[in-house]
Every structure is written in C-alpha cells, then in structure tokens.
Image (tube, rainbow, N blue to C red; front, side, top):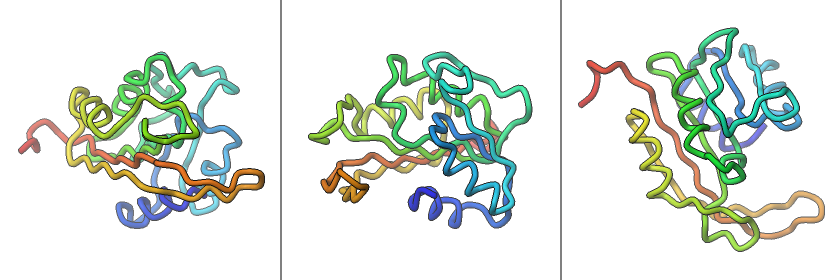
Length: 161
C-alpha cells in the first residue's frame, strides 16, 4: 500500500471503514485495504469511469476517498475533487497525492495554491497541503520527484468555523 496513505489512515481512522480509490490502477491499495478489514472499491478508465466527469458511486458513501498520482493527468481536475466531496460521508476524509508543477519528470500544472483553491471552492475544511521530495526507487526509475500531498475533510455546515 502507498506508505503515505497508510500513515494517513493510521492517523485518522481507529477502525476500518469504507474507502473509494479514484484512479485505482492495479487496485493494489484497494486490495491492501480490504485485507485490513475495509470495504474498499476502486474506479478508473478500466472500470468504465472517466474521472474528468463527476462520478457518484451507486453502492455506498465513504469515510475515505483517495487518489494517488491521477489528478495531474486529467483535463478537468476539478471534477476529481468534486467527485471526492460528493462521495464522502460527513466528517469523511479526502487524501490526495500528485506531482507538483516543479517536478522535472512529470507534466503537472498543479501547485499548493491550485490544490488549496480547489479544496476550498468545493467546501472542504481542515485541509493540509505539503510538498515532499520523494525518491522513486521502482525498477527502472531511480530519481527524485516533487510531490503534493493534501488532505481535507467534509464537515457538516454547522461545524464550519
């Protein structure tokens, strides 16, 4: 499982819940969460879901919606943020990782201000955004990336401060 996602879950959830992976790819994180007792599902192009459009899961709502290294590839990245918000339960969390626009290997247009603006405009609260230098030691890679890591919470309107 993505180590940063694993740490986020350990810090924000005391018991397994329901998770949605936006851009599930090989479903590695979904399967790891299921092994930990979560009800987890994933969507992406292979499941017939275009994340450039709003997607609302017909099966359930979620305590956690996450997306790793997908949003920077989308023509309409705001739709992924909206999709996360619409699929979350009140007090649920959104976790996001993507490449920063300063990353010299990827082609991302995203930075802290862009992500913060998208989270705020849709109604997320309690957001945190970090820029990390992460070494990619996957076979054939062996280089550094600049990564944006963000999280935000969907809270009830009466809880807004």
